[in-house]
Image (tube, rainbow over all chains, first blue to last red; front, side, top):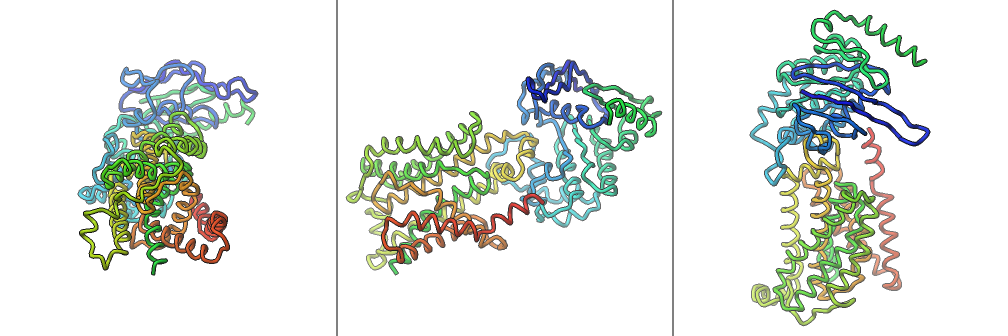
Amino acid sequence: MLELKNIYKNYNPGSVNELCLFEGFHLKIEDGEFVSVVGSNGSGKTSMLNIICGSIDADKGQILVNGEDITGKKDFLRQRRIGRVYQDPSKGTCPGMTILENMSIADHKGKVFGLGRGVKKHRMEAYREMLRPLGLGLEDKMYTKVGALSGGQRQALALLMSTMTPIEFLILDEHTAALDPKTAEIIMELTDQIVREKKVTTIMVTHNLRYAVEYGNRLIMMHEGNAILDKRGEEKKQIHTEEIMRIFNEISVECGN
Amino acid sequence: MALILSVLEQGMIYAIMALGVYITYKILDFPDLTVDGSFPMGAAIACILISKGMNPYLTLPVSFAAGALVGMITGMIHVKLKVRDLLSGIIMMTALYTVNLRIAGRANLPIYNQENIFDNHFINSFFPSSLEKYKTVVIIFVIMILTKYLLDWYMNSQSGFMLRAVGDNETIVTSLGVDKGMVKIIGLSIANGLVSLSGCIFANQQRFFDISSGTGTVVIGLASVIIGTSIFKKVTFFRVTSSVIIGSLLYKACVAVAIRVIPASSDLKLVTAVLFLVILVIGTDRRKKVKKDA
C-alpha cells in the first residue's frame, strides 16, 4: 500500500514565478491496483510521481509504503522496490551498452554491484525468452547497442528491464507519449500483460484518455494539484472516454485554455 | 633508435595516466584537473620512499593508493559538497601543489644513486648486458599491459558496468537502486590512482622528482584520449583501452618530432598547446555531440 499524506509542494517560493502545486494532497493506493492518472499539463501528475520516487522532495507531508515512512529516504534506496518507465525512451536504458549488458544490469537491481562479472552469460537464454514475445526481433540482437534501436524497441526493453526483478510498484510516466500510435498500442498491451502477470501495483500517467479508460482498475483525474475525479472497480468500468473528455474540457475551459 | 625507444618509454608511461583521464573525461564526462596534482604526487611519493630506502616496487601500489585517495576527495567535493566538476579539480590541483612539496620536502628530489624499478640487483641479473638498453621499455610494457588488463577486467564487472552506465544515463543508475554519487567517486578514485601510478613510474625512469612535472598533464592525457578514440572509433576488434594507449604513443611521437623543429625547449608548452588545439579541431568529438542528441 502506498499513501501520500498531506503533501505540500511549492515551486520557486518567494519569486514572481511562485507556483503552489500541492496544498494538503492525499492519495492512497491499495496493493494490486492499476491506477491511470490523467490531467492537463501542470496539474501535478509528474510531480506526484517524482515525489513518490524521491526525485523531488515535498515541502511538507509524508509518504508511506506499507505503513513505513519513506519521506526522508534517498531516491536510489526507494527505487530498489520501484520500477519506473519514462516518457523519453532513452531514459530507461543505457544507449552505449548492448541489449545483453542492459538486461544484465537490470537483472541485478537491488543487489550489490561488486566485482562479479557484469554480463550474466548463463541468463542469455532466459533473456531471449523474455524478448521473444515482443515480436520485435530483439532476441537476435543481443550484442547490438541499445542506442541503435528505435524508440519503440527501446521503450519495450525499458519496460521489460524495469519489471525484471521483484518490485512493489511500477511507475509509468507517459511511457507511450513519444511513440507512434501503432507502437504505443503494442507497448500498452505489453504493459497490461506484465501488470497482470506480476500482479504489481501500478501508477500510469497518460495523456491518452482511451488508454486511461480501457486499462487499469482505477482512474484519477488531476487538476491544479487535486484529484478531482477518482473512480475504481465497477464505477470505473461504467466510465466512457466521451465522459472523461467532457469533464476534461470543462476544467480546461475554466482555466481559459 | 634512441628516439624511438624514448617515445615508446614515455608514451607507455603516459598511457597509464591517459587511461585515468579516459575514465574521467570520456566515461564520467568530468574534466578532472586533479591529475595535474596527482601525477607529480606519484612522482614525489616514489622519490621520497626510494630515497628512504624502500623497495622501489612497493612505491607502485603506494602511489596508486595515494592517488585513489586524492581522487576520492575530488569526488566528495563534487558530489557531497556540490561543487562544480571543473572547480573541484582546480581546488584539488592547487592544494596538491603544497601537499607534493611537503611529501618530497623540497621542489626537486633526485634519486640518481638509488635503485629503482628499472635498475636494481634483481632486474640487472636478469637482463644480459647486450639487452641493457631495452630493459626500461620492457618493464614499462609489462606494467602497462597489466594495468590495461586489470582495468578491462574491472570495466566488465558489475561495478564497472555502473561506471559506464553513470556516464551514459544517470537516471538508470538511480533506478537500479545504486547511488550515482558513489559511482562517480569510485570512478575518480580509480582514475587518479592510475595517474599517480603513472607519475610514480615516470619518477623511477627519470630518477628525479620535480614539482613542476605535473603541469600540463591533463593536456597530454586529453590529447592522447582524443587521438586514440577518434582514430579507432570505427574499429571494434580491440578495446577502447588499447586505442587510448596507441593515442598516447602517437601523441608522444608528435611531440618528439615537434621538439626537433622548435628553436628552444622553452617553446615546448606552446607547441603542446597548439598540438592539442589541432587534435581537438581534427578530432571527431563534435560529431559525437550530434549523435548524442539523436
